[in-house]
Length: 100
Ligand SMILES: [Cu+2]
Image 1 (cartoon, rainbow, N blue to C red):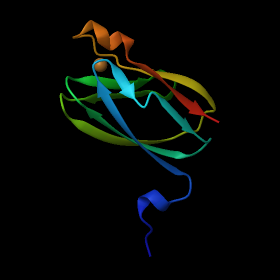
Image 2: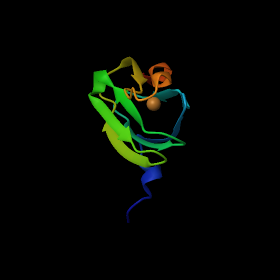
Image 3: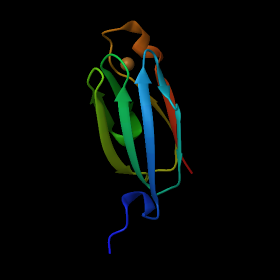
């Protein structure tokens, strides 16, 4: 019998709100090799969720939401940020992915 996805060992699920000009939460803290599922919803304009070290570059439409998954296969502390520049404040949207 299939388990609900949230019950799969090693899967971590996060809901992130992107809004002018923050991510909430701004820390995503996981264990090495967790499968990390992130849903990001924009409360206003288009934003991105970008983690260079993990080659993640996701665009969220105005008031849109996206879900994606990756394996946290590299240990460390990795900045994430919004790469959109239509509004200057997006340059201040920063957070940290921590893989322990
Ligand atoms: Cu932004």
